[in-house]
Length: 184
Image 1 (tube, helix red, strand yellow):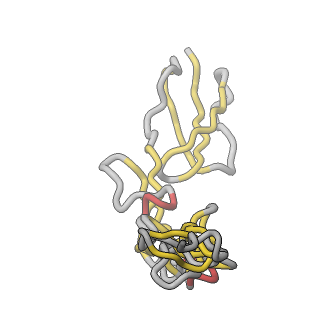
Image 2: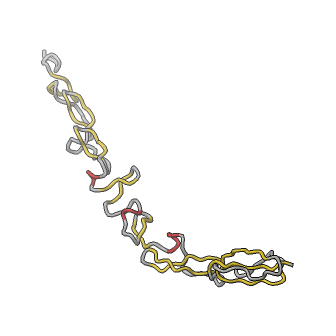
Protein backbone atom coordinates (compact mmCIF):
# COMPACT_ATOMS: atom_id res chain seq x y z
CA UNK A 1 0.00 0.00 0.00
CA UNK A 2 1.40 3.38 -1.02
CA UNK A 3 1.98 5.88 1.70
CA UNK A 4 0.34 9.30 1.63
CA UNK A 5 2.43 12.41 1.21
CA UNK A 6 1.80 13.27 4.84
CA UNK A 7 2.95 9.80 5.99
CA UNK A 8 6.19 10.43 4.09
CA UNK A 9 6.71 13.79 5.88
CA UNK A 10 5.57 15.85 2.89
CA UNK A 11 2.38 17.60 1.84
CA UNK A 12 0.03 17.19 -1.10
CA UNK A 13 -0.07 19.76 -3.92
CA UNK A 14 -2.32 19.17 -6.95
CA UNK A 15 -2.10 15.36 -6.46
CA UNK A 16 1.68 15.32 -6.01
CA UNK A 17 3.87 15.29 -2.93
CA UNK A 18 6.05 18.30 -2.17
CA UNK A 19 8.28 19.19 0.75
CA UNK A 20 6.57 20.73 3.78
CA UNK A 21 8.68 23.86 3.31
CA UNK A 22 7.58 24.18 -0.32
CA UNK A 23 4.50 26.16 -1.36
CA UNK A 24 1.62 25.12 -3.52
CA UNK A 25 0.07 27.53 -6.06
CA UNK A 26 1.40 30.91 -4.86
CA UNK A 27 0.27 33.78 -7.10
CA UNK A 28 2.71 36.15 -8.81
CA UNK A 29 2.09 38.73 -6.05
CA UNK A 30 3.04 36.17 -3.37
CA UNK A 31 6.19 34.43 -2.22
CA UNK A 32 6.75 31.20 -0.33
CA UNK A 33 7.83 31.55 3.30
CA UNK A 34 8.19 28.37 5.39
CA UNK A 35 5.66 26.50 3.28
CA UNK A 36 3.06 29.30 3.21
CA UNK A 37 2.22 31.82 0.46
CA UNK A 38 2.59 35.39 1.73
CA UNK A 39 2.38 38.76 -0.05
CA UNK A 40 5.57 40.04 -1.66
CA UNK A 41 7.02 43.24 -0.24
CA UNK A 42 8.83 46.10 -1.94
CA UNK A 43 12.11 44.34 -1.16
CA UNK A 44 11.19 41.26 -3.22
CA UNK A 45 11.93 40.90 -6.93
CA UNK A 46 8.62 41.44 -8.71
CA UNK A 47 7.10 42.89 -5.55
CA UNK A 48 5.11 46.12 -5.42
CA UNK A 49 7.07 49.30 -6.05
CA UNK A 50 6.94 52.10 -3.52
CA UNK A 51 5.07 55.23 -4.63
CA UNK A 52 6.97 58.41 -5.48
CA UNK A 53 8.54 59.97 -2.41
CA UNK A 54 8.89 56.62 -0.60
CA UNK A 55 11.80 54.22 -0.28
CA UNK A 56 11.78 50.51 0.52
CA UNK A 57 13.36 49.79 3.91
CA UNK A 58 13.22 46.26 5.37
CA UNK A 59 10.31 45.39 3.07
CA UNK A 60 8.23 48.45 4.01
CA UNK A 61 7.70 51.65 2.01
CA UNK A 62 8.89 54.55 4.15
CA UNK A 63 8.34 58.24 3.27
CA UNK A 64 11.58 59.96 2.26
CA UNK A 65 12.51 63.48 3.31
CA UNK A 66 12.31 66.15 0.62
CA UNK A 67 16.09 66.47 0.68
CA UNK A 68 16.57 62.70 0.20
CA UNK A 69 14.41 63.03 -2.94
CA UNK A 70 16.59 65.88 -4.28
CA UNK A 71 13.86 68.41 -3.44
CA UNK A 72 13.35 71.00 -0.72
CA UNK A 73 10.72 71.61 1.93
CA UNK A 74 8.15 74.40 1.52
CA UNK A 75 5.42 74.78 4.12
CA UNK A 76 5.44 71.06 4.90
CA UNK A 77 5.45 69.91 1.26
CA UNK A 78 8.22 69.00 -1.16
CA UNK A 79 8.97 71.27 -4.11
CA UNK A 80 11.65 71.07 -6.79
CA UNK A 81 15.01 72.43 -5.66
CA UNK A 82 14.80 75.07 -8.43
CA UNK A 83 11.43 76.44 -7.23
CA UNK A 84 10.94 79.27 -4.74
CA UNK A 85 8.92 79.04 -1.57
CA UNK A 86 9.06 82.63 -0.28
CA UNK A 87 10.24 86.01 -1.59
CA UNK A 88 13.55 85.52 0.25
CA UNK A 89 14.40 82.73 -2.23
CA UNK A 90 14.41 85.30 -5.06
CA UNK A 91 16.70 88.23 -5.91
CA UNK A 92 16.02 91.70 -4.50
CA UNK A 93 13.99 92.81 -7.55
CA UNK A 94 11.85 89.66 -7.64
CA UNK A 95 9.08 88.00 -5.65
CA UNK A 96 7.94 84.38 -5.42
CA UNK A 97 4.66 83.72 -7.27
CA UNK A 98 3.44 80.23 -8.12
CA UNK A 99 6.79 78.73 -7.01
CA UNK A 100 8.65 80.86 -9.60
CA UNK A 101 10.62 84.07 -9.11
CA UNK A 102 9.01 86.89 -11.11
CA UNK A 103 9.81 90.60 -11.39
CA UNK A 104 8.29 92.86 -8.74
CA UNK A 105 5.89 95.59 -9.81
CA UNK A 106 5.36 99.06 -8.36
CA UNK A 107 2.11 97.79 -6.82
CA UNK A 108 4.09 95.21 -4.79
CA UNK A 109 5.68 98.11 -2.90
CA UNK A 110 2.42 100.01 -2.54
CA UNK A 111 3.37 102.45 -5.31
CA UNK A 112 1.95 103.39 -8.70
CA UNK A 113 3.48 103.53 -12.17
CA UNK A 114 1.99 107.01 -12.74
CA UNK A 115 -0.23 109.56 -11.02
CA UNK A 116 -3.49 111.00 -12.29
CA UNK A 117 -3.82 114.73 -13.03
CA UNK A 118 -4.35 116.69 -9.85
CA UNK A 119 -2.01 114.48 -7.84
CA UNK A 120 1.52 115.26 -6.79
CA UNK A 121 3.92 112.57 -8.06
CA UNK A 122 6.81 111.76 -5.74
CA UNK A 123 9.35 109.61 -7.60
CA UNK A 124 10.34 106.48 -5.65
CA UNK A 125 12.96 104.01 -6.93
CA UNK A 126 11.69 100.51 -6.11
CA UNK A 127 12.95 97.08 -7.25
CA UNK A 128 14.86 98.61 -10.15
CA UNK A 129 11.72 100.43 -11.33
CA UNK A 130 10.67 104.08 -11.35
CA UNK A 131 7.53 104.18 -9.23
CA UNK A 132 5.50 107.00 -7.76
CA UNK A 133 3.86 107.82 -4.46
CA UNK A 134 0.85 109.91 -5.44
CA UNK A 135 -0.63 112.54 -3.13
CA UNK A 136 -3.84 114.42 -3.73
CA UNK A 137 -3.23 118.16 -4.11
CA UNK A 138 -5.29 120.53 -1.97
CA UNK A 139 -4.81 124.01 -3.37
CA UNK A 140 -8.05 125.55 -2.17
CA UNK A 141 -8.94 126.79 1.27
CA UNK A 142 -12.52 125.87 1.98
CA UNK A 143 -14.71 126.49 4.99
CA UNK A 144 -13.06 129.81 5.91
CA UNK A 145 -15.29 132.86 5.75
CA UNK A 146 -12.90 135.66 4.92
CA UNK A 147 -12.81 138.96 3.21
CA UNK A 148 -9.38 138.05 1.84
CA UNK A 149 -6.90 135.22 2.11
CA UNK A 150 -3.17 135.56 1.70
CA UNK A 151 -1.03 132.41 1.59
CA UNK A 152 2.72 132.20 1.92
CA UNK A 153 5.37 129.62 2.70
CA UNK A 154 5.77 128.63 6.33
CA UNK A 155 8.05 131.11 8.13
CA UNK A 156 6.67 134.76 8.45
CA UNK A 157 3.70 136.22 10.17
CA UNK A 158 0.26 137.43 9.22
CA UNK A 159 0.52 141.15 8.46
CA UNK A 160 -2.87 142.73 9.04
CA UNK A 161 -2.99 144.48 12.42
CA UNK A 162 -6.32 146.22 11.83
CA UNK A 163 -8.57 143.14 11.93
CA UNK A 164 -8.59 139.72 13.49
CA UNK A 165 -6.21 137.33 11.76
CA UNK A 166 -6.34 133.52 11.94
CA UNK A 167 -3.41 131.38 10.84
CA UNK A 168 -4.21 128.00 9.27
CA UNK A 169 -1.50 125.61 8.03
CA UNK A 170 -2.50 123.51 5.04
CA UNK A 171 -0.61 121.01 2.92
CA UNK A 172 -0.67 121.40 -0.82
CA UNK A 173 1.50 120.52 -3.78
CA UNK A 174 4.01 123.23 -2.91
CA UNK A 175 4.47 122.02 0.69
CA UNK A 176 3.01 123.42 3.87
CA UNK A 177 1.59 126.91 3.58
CA UNK A 178 0.38 129.28 6.25
CA UNK A 179 -2.76 131.04 5.19
CA UNK A 180 -3.66 134.34 6.81
CA UNK A 181 -7.44 134.65 6.85
CA UNK A 182 -8.71 138.15 7.56
CA UNK A 183 -12.05 137.52 9.12
CA UNK A 184 -15.22 139.52 8.50
